[in-house]
Length: 462
Image 1 (cartoon, rainbow, N blue to C red):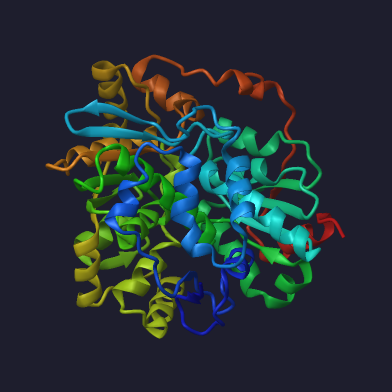
Image 2: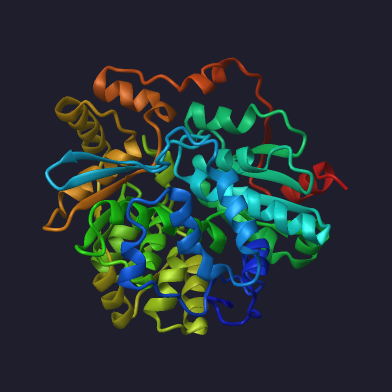
């Protein structure tokens, strides 16, 4: 199994190398050279099986010879053993032909745990075998950072540095990053927004001398292994609702495009998906792109769904690569225009491809609060603001196929917004009840690449 860069100028890699490398040296993202196929019979055979078994069957074709069957099965078992629901990703009906896929039963109460817990196990296997140590640097709008810290804390072969925008994550998200006391994890609050943090991480990867000196690795959604782990719950939920004997639709609240791109990969593998719907908050660059063909940054406005406060959607590059027919030079040109001019206009053929594969919608702040209140009033379910964005947009795209909205985070991660909408302040699970009492450990730093690289070199283990 080989992986190629979306910009076409980096060497092909196997799964393990692509996982450890994350961002290609030409600045592109790794994608599989070919997407493995599952037959209708193989998809039907997933119905009713444990989540761990579905994960093994879906992921195995992408792994190649990087890990043995026993290694992969063991990693999957360890990754999901700490989840708080036996089904790992249960499906719950909230309306006529409308379902929630609950992805918040992991250790940090967000969908990122599905990928990050597994990546932690795979990194440990690979690095132990190689006798190497790496420095993981990640940017987060809230959930990726806590999931990465939880997955890698205390591991011998890894130092973790997570950059998050100061004052632009919820208190629960911040405390999940700043309260772990393991010496190998470091929370860094950057004076800027998420796009600034993400740009700093990409700049570090493109500083090849620094990258090689600290043995840099990445676990943001630019990492292909992250996307692959998320493909699994599309198959798990779809087969629970009758696939492959009937199609299923999905609505995905997304800012960085990784989660919905995982659904696209599931569809390319053979899952019959009627609609893949992008749901955005007021930072709606993805929705505007599909509506107008112009992919133009307008600045990030803080919202009650902060994990979606993004204008540079890294994984959108993977979709562009397909929309442009695999032309790496064309992708590189558009990404250069985005960096230098703040946007680009899609070629007509690429826009038509995107519209054929994805639908989209947006939810304002008021609509998000109204949706939280209405779902609570009519179903008794308490949902987080990101999930509410998804529900609102999903309701605009309901059809004959069952619609599954991804419930991406536990409502207790965003208690202020939920209380504002419902009058109810959702409590944290018992295992996290003392979160507000734990001491915090964080470094505040300017949006300055040289200063952050210096801090990383000083603090990483030798």
